[in-house]
Amino acid sequence: MELFDVYPLFNINIVKGKGCHVWDENNTEYLDLYGGHAVISIGHAHPHYVEAISNQVAQLGFYSNSVINKLQQQLAERLGKACGYEDYSLFLINSGAEANENALKLASFHNGRTRVVSFSKAFHGRTSLAVEATNNPKIIAPVNANSHVTFLELNDIEGAKAELEKGDVCAVIIEGIQGVGGIRIPKPAFLKALRELCDQTGTVLILDEIQSGYGRSGKFFAHQHAGIRPDMITVAKGIANGFPMGGVLISPKFKPVYGQLGTTFGGNHLACSAALAVLDVMESEHLVDNAAKVGQHLIDELKKIDGIKEVRGEGLMIGIEFDQPVQELRKRLIYEQHVFTGASGTNVIRLLPPLCLSMEESDEFLKRFKSLLA
Ligand SMILES: Cc1ncc(COP(=O)(O)O)c(C=O)c1O
Image 1: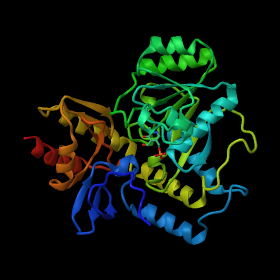
Image 2: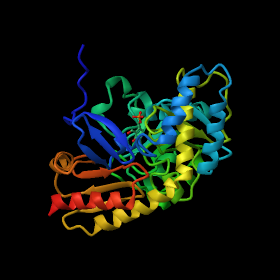
Image 3: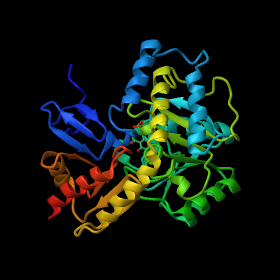
Image 4: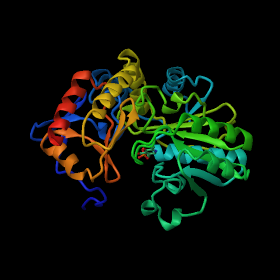
């Protein structure tokens, strides 16, 4: 059997990681400014993380959601404290798309409505309603095109007002910072207006913090820069540093109903031990503050470089936009400078490094990056 060939691959086999560095099978070292697509939060192979999941798998890797799982309870309590949502509750699944799928489903159970508002360039995942709320017709199969979703321009307060005042919108779903869309930040005034409009119209406000959350923006959640509180927050990626996991943080206004949501693997013992180890390290190494500090340094320095159209971002979620396609530059970064970065569309380089990136590592990146632009 061969692999179903849906990924255009770089010809590199990564076999080892440590902190913000990875190594290929020939022992070539790379600086990781991509974090395996924003997934590596506390750094590769962190010793505390390795010890925690090794001990857990030796004890109990999995048992079903039909029995008490104290690790889930600990995670809910610790995460609530870490992010400032102690009064919310937590539903655990295995991926970002599943988190959004369940959030949208719960919103619809709650208010009985079926319409969803999403935004231009949004990405919310590849399952049925999550992909329908994703602004990319190429990945929406005919079976997913069910006319639930209206796309509005990001930051268009008047457009949102007109749509929500119709009174039939189930949920608004919006990324804390758009990632796949090219690091586009919703304006604080826009998020505040959405919050008010949702309150006035009985619409559920869902913040997708799958890429922008878990400390990446220099606050636990990107929407906290705007000072709003959504009805639901979806998380995945950095939550377990590469162990597949997702979660929905749910406001007390939603009442749980037995059997309404469920999953086989979600919140299993091994995933929870990984997520708890992530929170341990985020706290002991002050990684949210580090993301704010090192990210600001990178943004300030990148803005000084000639030939870049625009630098956008918060913390360690940074987009570098050029007037021309970046495909060749990204390849040269990998093959000549041994630096992994991401891309968005054709013209944007995306930086999503582990949150433990040091000042020295960020300067090393800048040196290698500038050497290709000179
Ligand atoms: C903002 C956002 N939402 C949802 C997803 C989907 O997450 P997953 O690939 O874990 O299903 C992603 C993945 O890139 C994302 O960036």
